[in-house]
Length: 64
Ligand SMILES: [Zn+2]
Image (cartoon, rainbow, N blue to C red; front, top):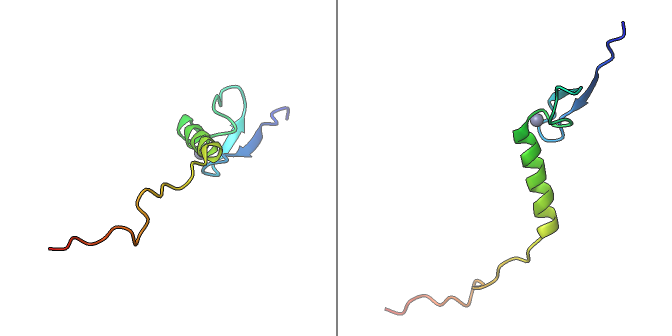
């Protein structure tokens, strides 16, 4: 019984991922989940301020 494969949970979808060389996207279950997580991480660091070009109230209704 030397087969002690570690199972980790995919951070994105919580699927079980075998921690082994074949799992090239570990700790993610797939490339898709990895990209999703990277995207979230990237958006975290971006944190662009809310675009307030036209705040509500200043846009007057057309006077026809
Ligand atoms: Zn996943």
